[in-house]
Length: 583
Image (cartoon, rainbow, N blue to C red; front, top):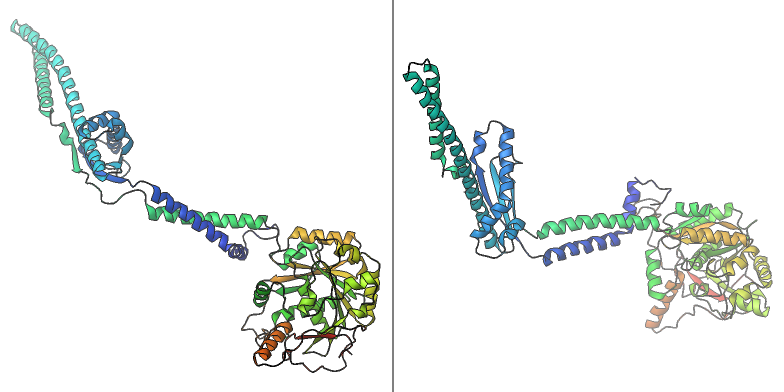
């Protein structure tokens, strides 16, 4: 996100996610495939479980003592001694090291219960079950042997004490027989001997029975399904991680992406107001993909036409037609739709009772003659190079649904060095000639940062409109374009932003277009020609060879639409030589 935006704006979050939805999808799917591949490449492992109960915990004096007993049992089960004993019972190679690596023990409820679970993992389910059973059996045998050893050690100690007690009892008995006053001592010695004998007898009876304190309540059976890899869980975790990674990548990319996304971005970069926001045209994009460059001239009932009308209002507020009569239109960098904006703006201004002359000064890659279906044999380049008058190059472009016409001066043949041709002092005279019979002269210029032509022309103009395309033009390009024009002595009036998403009225709104937009004049004309050709009728010539004339004035009365034009409501154009039908 950018600095001027609220990082907690949910709408901004949604916009970033939607803009980079394919990146997020690609990252998520990629990580999910990695997780799936990781799972499929792993060797399946099986987990066999056996459970043992320690009966001594029921005799413990406290919960802490019982917990200590269970923790001791777990350490014993995972010890090297039990592993060695278990390995001796197994009929496969691996030894104690195999048992230590593949066996784990835990209490069912964090040492708060007497049940201990022993888990053995292996790629062979039968071997896993055999290992778990061998461990629990070895553990029970180990605990029994340990108990018997402790009992024997206690018996040995008690027998030593018993020998001393018997000697003391015999001595006291001899003293008592000789008349000594030792009856009490003798009775105590007899009682001590009896107690020691009872303890020894009890211990001897417990030998060999210590294994009863540990009971295997469930031996392990060979598992039927692998415990690892858990493909479903791995893929789910991978999808979640991929989604998080994709969204993070989208926000990082959006933060590093300097391209404009809104009108506010342009106004912040330029420090100038936006004079028009042209909505994205799906139809126009399809035509550009199909035929290269053929921008749509807006019709009367389209959202694009309304956007250009708003631009016309804003330009008039700046003095268009009065103090501002020569306006250049240029993109900051290549791919900026400057020619389309020029054509549509000229159409809109002409409908607003302004006489417009359009000069195509993009001698590198001229487009206006293609938009208006005009010839390009003569134009700006021939007038500047050979000193001819502007009238010899003018083509009258008539709007069929209106009473006005546009005077078009094509770029002309491409010179060897276009920048040198435009740098001549003759250009100022061309502008003066264009303004003799027109209210406004629109100059289509090449991209500001691509070549020096725009900076060469800017000082001769009253102002320059910078065209920015959403998702294409960057902030740095706009700032550098304005700086270049102003350093050359020109003036930037403002900006027009094209391909702006979400600036059309709702379809159910009363201000939405009343009818489906008609095709542009050039496209409707071509459609009519194709229909006429199929019927065997003559084709209507879209362009005729221009003849020398002065720029046309406003028409006194509506021109009757020719056979190649569409009905009123569309921006339908015809081109004819200046002086033929131009008033």
